Image 1 (cartoon, one colour):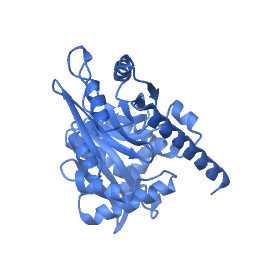
Image 2 (tube, rainbow, N blue to C red):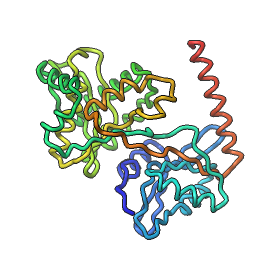
Image 3 (cartoon, helix red, strand yellow):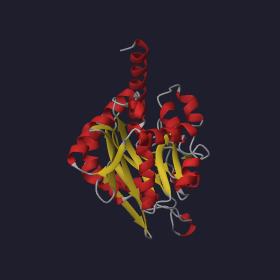
Length: 328
C-alpha cells in the first residue's frame, strides 16, 4: 500500500525541528523512512513523538516500529507517541506493540489537529469561486474593490510583522500561540523554496500575513495573522484566495487550510474558540468534507514515568480549570 508522505515527516520539517532544539531520529526499512522527534517534560523526562505516520510502501505492510521502539529505549524515552495517518496504520502499529507485550493507550490529547480541511484546487478559478459560500466570494471581491494588494515575500521586515500578527491574532481568538522564537526559527529555516509569506497591504498598512508551505502537489496554510485595522476590508479572504491562485500556478492540486473542528471533537470541546476559524475555512468549499485522523496513541515503555506524566498532566489540567472558573 502506498501513501504520500506527510509534510510533518519531511526533511524540511525535521530540519526545522532540529533548528528549534529538538532531537530527531529517522528509521529506514526497505526504502521506507519514518521519523520521530524527541520531546522532554519536567519530572517524566523524554518521550518520542512520531507525527502523521504514513502507510509503509513495503510488502505485507511491514512497519519499522521495532526500530522506532528500540531507538526510543536507547534514548531513554518513557513512551512513544505515535500519530497514525490512517486507521489502518493505527491498527497495525497497535497490533505490533501489543504483540510485543507493550501497553498502548489513547493519548490524553492530540498533537496535531484531528480534522484538517483540504480542498481540491484542480478546478478552474471560476469553478472554485462558484463553489464558495456567497459571503466568502463577496468578501474576496470586496477586498479587491477596496484596493487590498497581496504579494509574496521572504524579507526580514515582513517576517517580524508576521510574528507580531500571529501572536496577537492567537490572543484575540483565545488560542495559545507558540513562543515568538518558534515562529522566528520556522521562518529562518523554511522560507525560500519550501515556504513563502503572503502579505495583504492597503495604502501602506499591513492587514494580514500568511505562511504557506509548498510540498509536492499540495500548498499548506501553516500559520497566519491579521491586523486590527481596516478589518472591514476583509483582507484574510483575499489572502487565502491569492495563495490558492498562486498554488495553482505552481502546479498544486490541493490546498490544505489546516485544522478545523467540525465533528464530535467540536461538540465535546465545550469551547467556541475554533468555531470562527472553522466557519472561515469551510466557506471556501462548503461541500468538501474534512480529513479525519485517528489521533495520538502512546506506547508505554516505562510504566512508572508514564504514570508520573499522566498524574502531573491531570493536576495541571485541574488547576487550569479552577483558575479559569475563578477568572484568574
